[in-house]
Amino acid sequence: MYAFRSWLYIGINSAPSYLAVHVLGLDKLAALRLTQIVLVLVATAADTALVSAIRHRFGWR
Amino acid sequence: MALLLAAGPTHASPALLPSSFSMYCVAWSYAEWLRGRTAASITAGALAVLLGWPFCALLFVPMGLHMLVGAGGHSTFNVLAAGAGASAAILGASVAVDWFMYGKPLLAVVNIILYNALGVGGDGQGSDLYGVEPPEWYLLNCLLNFGLWLPLLLMSPVLVLGRGIVRGAEGGRIMWAMLLVLPAVGWLVFMSGRAHKEERFLFPAYPLMAAAAGASLAEVWSLIEYSLDGCVAVTGQAGEAHGVDAGNNGMKKHDGATSLDGTSGE
Image (cartoon, rainbow over all chains, first blue to last red):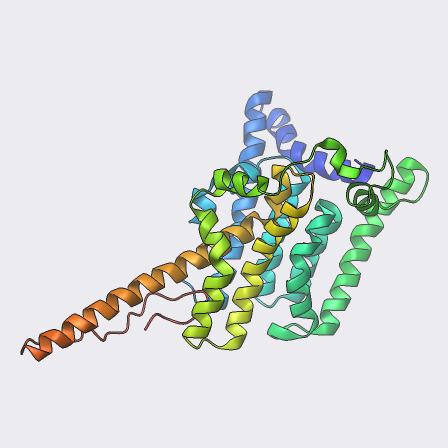
């Protein structure tokens, strides 16, 4: 792993956990779960955009 | 439905891996491409390749060529300008930070390709050092991760192309559909040819694999409705012959079943 990529992925993966621990006061396990929920939501948003674009392009139900 | 019901995309989403990041960006890039937004599509693709996992560049080859020839409302100049701009911004940041931290200029994305694909560095084995698997490994893996969607995924190019031609769909629409389903199947074939295999290597293609499986399901469903309509038509004609009013049942055009190539199953 390289510095820039490390920073990027540590940022993506730990920022929600950091906020959950230090802002919301959750314990570490709950923070990890929250991070995973955030990542699932990001993936869901991307997938929803794809499905919406397919419907737009093809008039697909 | 495929994205919701298949296990693969569900466990790939929160996997905390570069492959997962690439997966989000691939879905985003293809969405923008389908909507004709060149700059956003290229930027998302560049993020997937240059910050995520460089090998997923293969997923963008058909889409990139389609945009480069100026099809689908994309302009060649815009494609080249967006590609150059996004690459310069991403690689510039990457090189600057790595140069500062390591004290020498280096391109992480190039080193990843050199080591894993070409075996440069280490003992020359590249990624094969971490184990090799037989060619059918990804098929068995996808059977677990996609279940019954896997056969639909594998049939998608034939079904989409075949049904599109048979029903006389417009060539451009067939091309859009094929450009969406081919990278998914092509990725599976390409990765099966590589000796070193890991489940996460398929993550970037998961959204496209689900879309291809969904396209197949739409075609199969359309075929079933077409067959049922045919049966009703035959029954209706027989009924008329016997003095029974068959109404419009036999010949009605069902307006709901639209397949990926945009033709309905009349």
